[in-house]
Length: 190
Ligand SMILES: C[S@@+](CC[C@H](N)C(=O)[O-])C[C@H]1O[C@@H](n2cnc3c(N)ncnc32)[C@H](O)[C@@H]1O
Image (tube, rainbow, N blue to C red):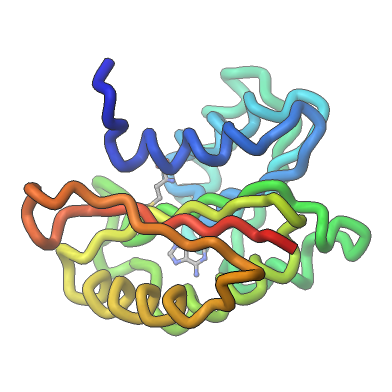
Protein backbone atom coordinates (compact mmCIF):
# COMPACT_ATOMS: atom_id res chain seq x y z
CA UNK A 1 0.00 0.00 0.00
CA UNK A 2 1.43 3.35 -1.00
CA UNK A 3 0.61 6.59 0.73
CA UNK A 4 -0.26 8.26 -2.57
CA UNK A 5 -3.02 6.41 -4.41
CA UNK A 6 -2.61 5.46 -8.07
CA UNK A 7 -4.90 7.53 -10.28
CA UNK A 8 -7.73 4.98 -10.60
CA UNK A 9 -7.59 4.19 -6.88
CA UNK A 10 -7.80 7.89 -6.12
CA UNK A 11 -10.82 8.24 -8.44
CA UNK A 12 -12.55 5.40 -6.57
CA UNK A 13 -11.59 6.65 -3.11
CA UNK A 14 -13.35 9.99 -3.47
CA UNK A 15 -16.58 8.28 -4.58
CA UNK A 16 -16.33 5.90 -1.62
CA UNK A 17 -15.80 8.84 0.70
CA UNK A 18 -19.21 10.40 -0.05
CA UNK A 19 -21.30 7.25 -0.62
CA UNK A 20 -23.78 5.65 1.79
CA UNK A 21 -25.17 2.10 1.44
CA UNK A 22 -28.49 3.23 -0.02
CA UNK A 23 -27.20 5.81 -2.50
CA UNK A 24 -27.52 6.04 -6.28
CA UNK A 25 -24.33 6.05 -8.37
CA UNK A 26 -23.48 6.21 -12.06
CA UNK A 27 -20.72 4.53 -14.06
CA UNK A 28 -20.62 6.63 -17.24
CA UNK A 29 -18.12 4.32 -19.00
CA UNK A 30 -18.74 0.71 -17.97
CA UNK A 31 -16.09 -0.98 -20.17
CA UNK A 32 -15.10 -4.33 -18.65
CA UNK A 33 -17.18 -3.56 -15.58
CA UNK A 34 -14.49 -3.36 -12.90
CA UNK A 35 -15.56 0.10 -11.75
CA UNK A 36 -19.24 -0.87 -12.04
CA UNK A 37 -18.68 -3.80 -9.69
CA UNK A 38 -16.78 -1.57 -7.27
CA UNK A 39 -19.67 0.93 -7.26
CA UNK A 40 -22.30 -1.81 -6.87
CA UNK A 41 -20.53 -3.12 -3.77
CA UNK A 42 -20.61 0.37 -2.23
CA UNK A 43 -24.42 0.57 -2.41
CA UNK A 44 -25.97 -2.77 -1.32
CA UNK A 45 -29.29 -1.02 -0.59
CA UNK A 46 -29.01 1.50 -3.43
CA UNK A 47 -28.46 1.26 -7.14
CA UNK A 48 -25.89 1.83 -9.89
CA UNK A 49 -26.73 2.97 -13.43
CA UNK A 50 -24.12 2.06 -16.04
CA UNK A 51 -23.60 3.19 -19.63
CA UNK A 52 -21.54 1.90 -22.55
CA UNK A 53 -22.02 2.16 -26.31
CA UNK A 54 -20.36 -1.24 -26.88
CA UNK A 55 -22.57 -4.32 -26.59
CA UNK A 56 -19.43 -6.38 -25.93
CA UNK A 57 -18.66 -4.27 -22.84
CA UNK A 58 -22.23 -4.48 -21.53
CA UNK A 59 -22.39 -8.27 -21.96
CA UNK A 60 -19.02 -8.75 -20.30
CA UNK A 61 -20.12 -6.61 -17.37
CA UNK A 62 -23.47 -8.43 -17.01
CA UNK A 63 -21.55 -11.67 -16.59
CA UNK A 64 -19.10 -10.13 -14.10
CA UNK A 65 -22.00 -8.81 -11.99
CA UNK A 66 -23.89 -12.10 -12.15
CA UNK A 67 -20.82 -14.01 -11.01
CA UNK A 68 -20.45 -11.58 -8.10
CA UNK A 69 -24.22 -11.89 -7.35
CA UNK A 70 -24.73 -8.14 -7.67
CA UNK A 71 -28.32 -7.38 -8.65
CA UNK A 72 -28.39 -3.65 -7.92
CA UNK A 73 -27.12 -2.45 -11.32
CA UNK A 74 -29.08 -1.27 -14.37
CA UNK A 75 -26.98 -1.28 -17.54
CA UNK A 76 -27.77 0.80 -20.62
CA UNK A 77 -26.21 -0.08 -23.98
CA UNK A 78 -26.39 3.56 -25.10
CA UNK A 79 -24.29 6.73 -24.92
CA UNK A 80 -24.02 8.34 -21.49
CA UNK A 81 -25.35 11.49 -23.17
CA UNK A 82 -28.85 10.04 -22.70
CA UNK A 83 -28.43 9.97 -18.91
CA UNK A 84 -31.12 12.60 -18.23
CA UNK A 85 -33.64 10.69 -20.34
CA UNK A 86 -33.21 7.22 -18.84
CA UNK A 87 -32.65 7.97 -15.17
CA UNK A 88 -36.01 8.42 -13.42
CA UNK A 89 -36.92 12.08 -12.89
CA UNK A 90 -37.38 11.53 -9.16
CA UNK A 91 -33.67 10.67 -8.89
CA UNK A 92 -32.48 13.86 -10.57
CA UNK A 93 -30.60 15.79 -7.87
CA UNK A 94 -30.14 12.61 -5.82
CA UNK A 95 -27.09 10.99 -7.46
CA UNK A 96 -24.23 10.73 -4.94
CA UNK A 97 -21.37 9.92 -7.32
CA UNK A 98 -20.42 9.53 -10.96
CA UNK A 99 -17.32 7.84 -12.41
CA UNK A 100 -15.96 8.52 -15.88
CA UNK A 101 -13.05 6.38 -17.06
CA UNK A 102 -12.43 7.94 -20.46
CA UNK A 103 -10.80 6.64 -23.62
CA UNK A 104 -11.11 3.21 -25.20
CA UNK A 105 -11.72 -0.27 -23.84
CA UNK A 106 -8.42 -1.90 -22.86
CA UNK A 107 -7.87 -4.77 -25.29
CA UNK A 108 -10.77 -3.55 -27.46
CA UNK A 109 -11.19 -1.40 -30.56
CA UNK A 110 -9.09 1.75 -30.04
CA UNK A 111 -11.24 3.63 -32.55
CA UNK A 112 -14.21 3.44 -30.16
CA UNK A 113 -13.28 6.07 -27.65
CA UNK A 114 -15.06 8.73 -25.65
CA UNK A 115 -15.34 11.96 -27.64
CA UNK A 116 -14.61 15.48 -26.41
CA UNK A 117 -17.94 17.06 -27.31
CA UNK A 118 -20.07 14.22 -25.93
CA UNK A 119 -18.01 14.03 -22.75
CA UNK A 120 -18.46 17.74 -22.01
CA UNK A 121 -22.20 17.67 -22.82
CA UNK A 122 -22.66 14.63 -20.58
CA UNK A 123 -20.64 16.16 -17.78
CA UNK A 124 -22.97 19.18 -17.82
CA UNK A 125 -25.95 16.85 -17.45
CA UNK A 126 -24.26 14.88 -14.66
CA UNK A 127 -23.62 18.09 -12.72
CA UNK A 128 -27.36 18.82 -12.85
CA UNK A 129 -28.47 15.42 -11.56
CA UNK A 130 -25.74 15.16 -8.89
CA UNK A 131 -26.86 15.85 -5.33
CA UNK A 132 -25.35 18.55 -3.13
CA UNK A 133 -22.23 17.00 -1.58
CA UNK A 134 -21.96 14.51 -4.46
CA UNK A 135 -18.76 14.00 -6.45
CA UNK A 136 -17.75 13.22 -10.02
CA UNK A 137 -14.41 11.58 -10.77
CA UNK A 138 -12.94 11.52 -14.26
CA UNK A 139 -9.89 9.48 -15.24
CA UNK A 140 -8.39 11.30 -18.24
CA UNK A 141 -5.96 9.76 -20.77
CA UNK A 142 -4.13 12.51 -22.71
CA UNK A 143 -1.73 9.94 -24.23
CA UNK A 144 -3.84 9.40 -27.39
CA UNK A 145 -5.03 11.96 -29.90
CA UNK A 146 -8.71 12.28 -28.94
CA UNK A 147 -7.73 12.02 -25.27
CA UNK A 148 -5.44 15.02 -25.60
CA UNK A 149 -8.31 17.12 -27.01
CA UNK A 150 -10.64 15.83 -24.32
CA UNK A 151 -8.12 16.64 -21.59
CA UNK A 152 -7.70 20.23 -22.82
CA UNK A 153 -11.46 20.79 -23.15
CA UNK A 154 -12.18 19.34 -19.71
CA UNK A 155 -9.54 21.50 -18.02
CA UNK A 156 -10.96 24.59 -19.71
CA UNK A 157 -14.50 23.64 -18.73
CA UNK A 158 -13.69 22.89 -15.08
CA UNK A 159 -11.64 26.05 -14.63
CA UNK A 160 -14.70 28.12 -15.50
CA UNK A 161 -17.10 26.40 -13.08
CA UNK A 162 -18.33 28.70 -10.35
CA UNK A 163 -16.15 28.07 -7.33
CA UNK A 164 -18.94 28.61 -4.81
CA UNK A 165 -21.06 25.94 -6.48
CA UNK A 166 -18.30 23.46 -7.32
CA UNK A 167 -14.86 22.51 -6.02
CA UNK A 168 -12.69 21.14 -8.81
CA UNK A 169 -9.29 19.53 -8.49
CA UNK A 170 -6.67 17.77 -10.50
CA UNK A 171 -4.76 14.75 -9.17
CA UNK A 172 -1.64 14.19 -11.21
CA UNK A 173 1.87 12.88 -10.59
CA UNK A 174 4.15 15.67 -11.74
CA UNK A 175 7.20 13.44 -12.20
CA UNK A 176 5.38 10.98 -14.51
CA UNK A 177 5.30 11.38 -18.31
CA UNK A 178 3.53 14.59 -19.24
CA UNK A 179 0.74 12.70 -21.02
CA UNK A 180 0.21 10.11 -18.26
CA UNK A 181 -3.38 9.51 -17.06
CA UNK A 182 -4.67 11.79 -14.31
CA UNK A 183 -7.86 12.45 -12.36
CA UNK A 184 -10.23 15.38 -12.38
CA UNK A 185 -12.71 15.58 -9.51
CA UNK A 186 -15.69 17.83 -8.92
CA UNK A 187 -17.63 18.25 -5.71
CA UNK A 188 -21.04 19.90 -5.86
CA UNK A 189 -21.40 22.32 -2.98
CA UNK A 190 -25.02 23.43 -3.48
C1 LIG B 1 -11.51 3.14 -20.47
S1 LIG B 1 -12.94 2.25 -20.91
C2 LIG B 1 -13.73 2.05 -19.34
C3 LIG B 1 -13.06 1.07 -18.43
C4 LIG B 1 -13.99 0.52 -17.35
N1 LIG B 1 -14.44 1.53 -16.43
C5 LIG B 1 -13.44 -0.71 -16.64
O1 LIG B 1 -13.42 -0.76 -15.39
O2 LIG B 1 -13.05 -1.64 -17.35
C6 LIG B 1 -13.95 3.45 -21.72
C7 LIG B 1 -15.32 2.92 -22.17
O3 LIG B 1 -16.12 4.03 -22.57
C8 LIG B 1 -17.01 3.59 -23.55
N2 LIG B 1 -17.61 4.74 -24.24
C9 LIG B 1 -17.10 5.49 -25.26
N3 LIG B 1 -17.97 6.47 -25.59
C10 LIG B 1 -19.05 6.32 -24.77
C11 LIG B 1 -20.28 7.02 -24.64
N4 LIG B 1 -20.57 8.07 -25.41
N5 LIG B 1 -21.16 6.60 -23.70
C12 LIG B 1 -20.87 5.54 -22.89
N6 LIG B 1 -19.73 4.83 -22.99
C13 LIG B 1 -18.82 5.23 -23.90
C14 LIG B 1 -16.15 2.69 -24.44
O4 LIG B 1 -16.96 1.82 -25.18
C15 LIG B 1 -15.27 1.98 -23.39
O5 LIG B 1 -15.81 0.73 -23.05
